[in-house]
Length: 105
Image (cartoon, rainbow, N blue to C red):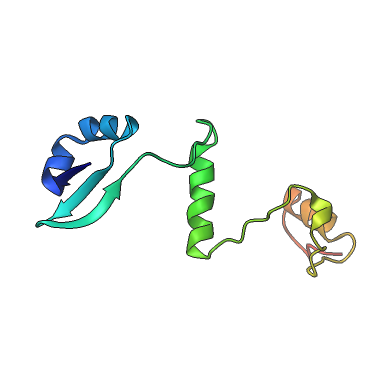
């Protein structure tokens, strides 16, 4: 286990990340007090999905998003929000036209 000040961590970040990757735990100090720990990640994401997954996880942790647990659409109740029959068709026609008149029949 290593203890390192913020200034040194910033200057040698790549070195410390390599140590973490090799299994070390780095204690980050600010004026002699431990303020954070760097350790190997417990979750591994595929490289192409990493940014999306991290963004969704952050939104979930902040409470701005509630992530579903099931991938099956049948596992969820239908939304109580509904548009009248033909609304989307009317809006599309309106958007594709000049945009004049009432967009919904």
